[in-house]
Image (cartoon, rainbow, N blue to C red; front, side, top):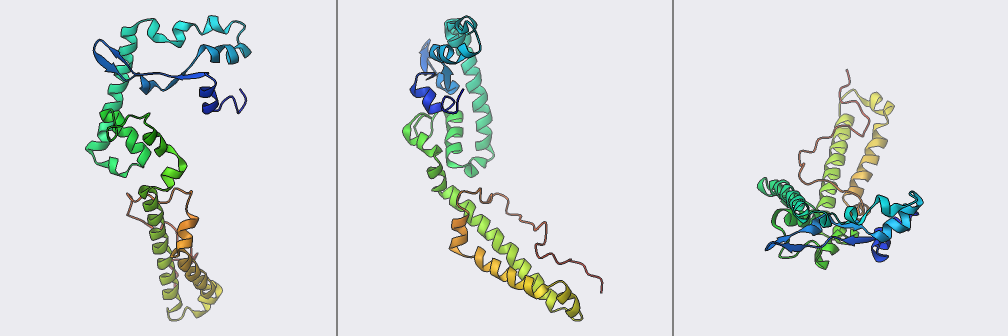
Length: 233
């Protein structure tokens, strides 16, 4: 398949994929839409003929639409899937981690756990719009990640500046400080600190993952100043 043929929007528009619809069975609603999209006979004819001489003989109508084989088995399978989804999703609510999920994931977890999000199903246009890049980047959740990244970088460079200043102030380390080029490193650290404090720095982060606000125990694993933390006198 060409890149164009692999594009989901193209496949849906041309009838190569069809959504599995919810339906009612024996008085109860079956959320078959949880299965998403499935290939159609048109897909089989157009693409599998490149692999098989008789694609329709390999992928029969019964395979493409398993509900035609046994409705009870089909329904049972869907309900088992939904039950497993609900059990998994509810754990996010029980331990409170749902509050840290990004907006679209939060909506998905609500639907998995309770069948809706603010009264809307997963195919509602308002819910679908949450999955766009612009919606995620414009969300409070994302902005909080950028601010958290900035906060951690400010802490990081502040500690570097303080350490380098302290090193320069140590009696008897003048020659060592010159050898390690500490004054230049200090100036560079101050410039970086000024940069990460600016709004321009936050804007430069747009498009990145930012930082996870959950993990506030930020530890400087490495000292970027390059100066040994222990120097024998």
